[in-house]
Each structure stands twice: as structure tokens, then as C-alpha cells.
Length: 430
Image (cartoon, rainbow, N blue to C red; front, side):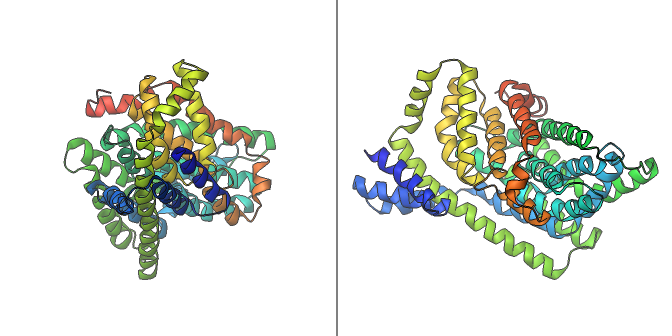
């Protein structure tokens, strides 16, 4: 009965439009009160969930991404991407994919990525004669690569939701190859639609211009290399790398590029504080939720239900993907990770999936949710920038969805995409 109350109140609050964090917390409170447990359990679980040293990486990575967003780094990355692939059919669309991938690497946030790249690329593509729905779809889907990059705070959230079963360093290394796969799939989709619609190709500016734009963008792109090199060499931990990222970004935007203003710095700080507060609230209330799910053995029950459908690992992985995709359409990325990881990670591991590989599966599924109504954060931002309705964009979304699903299938059924680099660079034994 307690499990029914937990599930019914949670989904009931979501249907009523209650924000996810409050829906999680209120459903946990209702269940605790029904169970007759002391109310102090609520606060104990919240504090234990938030009072973890590794969570310091979250505000630092968020702040670093906001500084990149407001510090003028995007313009240099856009110019580099345009010089590299702008001469191919549908050149601006291809440039958009590459630019989103590169900026996702330095920001680690799909929302920051679509905000920065969308503000530059969508008006530019519309001016050059590209359809608005194409410009928005390319931007919003390519920006999802940021969830897999070393600066992604969602990796930190997953590592801690996994209960210490996975190394943050291994996750950071594991995300690089899936990110490249996702970028390639998006390039194929963008090119295919460009050919079908007859979009023109741009002009190649010459290798001298390519190298010039690369030199201008390189200081910003170095943040990925600094984080990876520092963690893999043991110079600093994953948590310390986030602080290094902030320090480097401040030096870069204030003293190297000289594009950061005081007002933009304060705006970035305010946005980082707001985002961090939301994430920590989600972590606190999700800890209560996880406590109750563990108490009522939700993971075991879910595993038993899936085993009745099939005992084949490939089918179990497919079912997990479908469930995560559906949940991701109406839940925030962090909330989905925090709630679903304790349920589905044990099931996936029992079926033979490594926790690092499952982390990549989880992040791509949650990223898909960011681009799917009714939540669809990145899609709403992209549509607002493009001045187009969500419905109009959804009508031509299938080629880009197909690209994302193809990347998800590669990661799900080919473990090497997630595990090769951690094993090569870190000696990971998983």
C-alpha cells in the first residue's frame, strides 16, 4: 500500500503541474506520514543527500559553463566550425552541429549550448535562406552532446546516484567517444535533410583562415584537455577539476579574450547560483525518494516485472531505454537520473551491462527528454530563439530523432563505445 501511495502521489502531483522537485518531496512526505515514520527522517535524508564533498563539482561546472556562455567564447567557436565544414551542402547546418559539439565540450550543458549557439546560428541560418524548423532542429539536437562532455555536471549527479559503483574519472573518459558518435549521427541527419531540401553549399575560405580561426578558438577548447589531462595524470580529482575549470574560464574571458564584462559576470554568477540551488533541492528530495524506494525494494520489483517480459539482456536493455525515454519526456534531466539510477542500474548490471556504460545510456536518454515535450527545455529555448512553434518543429523532427536513437543503440549494444577509452587511459577494469 505504501508503494502505491508513493507512486500515485508523485504522478498525481506531476499531472497537477507541481514542479518535479516539489512533487518528489511531497510524495515522499505523504508516504512517510502514512507509514508513521518520524518526520525527522525527512530532514536527515535531505541533509545526508546534499552533504557530500563530490557535489562541490556541480556549482563549479555550472558556473564555468555560464561564464563560457556569457564570455563571448561562442563566436570564436562558430567561426571555426563554419570555416571547417561550411563548404559542404547545407554548410551552415553542418557548421551548427560542429559548433554545438565544441561549445558543449566547454560548457557541459545542453541548455547553455542551445542558448549560445542558437542565438548566433539560428538567425544566421534564417538570413541565409534555411528553413526555421531545420535551423532549430539542428541546434537543439546537436546541443545535447554537452551532456556527455567532461564538463557535464550531470555526470557527477549520475556517479553519486549510482551509490559509489562508478568512478567519475571513468565516466568523464567514457563520454568522449559516444559524444563523437552522436555528432557524426547528427551530421548525417543534417546533411540528408539539406540534400532533400536543396540547401546550398558555402565556400571554403582556405586553410590559412581555418588555422587562424582555430588559433582564436583554441584557448576556449583547451578547457576539455586541461580537465582530462589533470584527472588522468592524477594532478587533481574530478571535484578539483571543476574549480580549475572556473579559474581558467575567468582568466580566459577576462584577460585573454577580454570579452567578459562585469554585468555579464554577475549575470553568469546569478544564473549559476539559481541552477545550483535547483539541483541541490532535487538531490535532497530525491534522497528521501531513494530511501523509500530502497525500503520498499522497488528495484527488485521492477527487475521481477521485466524478467516476466523477457530474460534476454538485449530485450531488458531495450525496455530500460523505452522507460527512461518516456520518463524523460516529463521530468527534468537531474531528477530522472536521481530517481531512475537506483532502480535500473542494478537491473542493467545483473543483465551484464557495466555501470559506466549504463551511465552513457542514462545520459543520452535524459538528453532525448530535453528535446521532447512537455518538458523539452532545449526545444523550448530553440523555438523561442527561432520564433517558431513547438508543433511546427515537431513535424520535421524525425530525421534528427533517428540520429539520436541510432547513437543510443550504438552505446547500448556496443560496450566498446563507452568502455574503450576508460580502459585505455585509466586501466579501468569494468
